[in-house]
Image: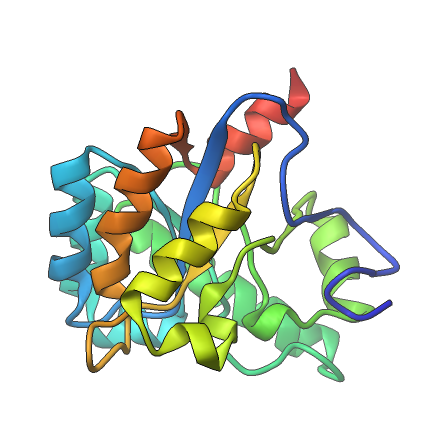
Length: 213
């Protein structure tokens, strides 16, 4: 048992329980100057993904953040500073999340804002805050970037996702600070490969709605 699979308060979502061949493609961090490259692929494939953005990076790259909203992508909250949310005071946690919520609204996003903690870390105070505010902890069940032997090769990233995706999977990629574009170059292959397997892509909000039915 670890802090990614257990918490005392609130709900954790790593994968949605469904028999339908649907997945959510999610991106952590940023925005950054890589937004145009990522959007070009998503728009070409007619895919909507969920971007968990860092508040301080929205401050730094507001135009890139607005591009995501204009293109119809889903925006999530990844805290303001991207500091780990363990052993932090309630006031610190509240400010990190609510400041970022305000920035997300400021760039024009109007839908439900889901939350993902930095590094997936959440112990007691953060989950308690989320539960009190009727928010879930959104995690993932596929993270190819976490394996060094896979992360260094676009084709290996694609293969890992295609081999391991299941109905309701939440896929996590980190392309925003990808200097060599290794992860970015895997996005198209992941989308095309999963489409060939009969999968369709949903946002996290859409997956959660499916689970309610």
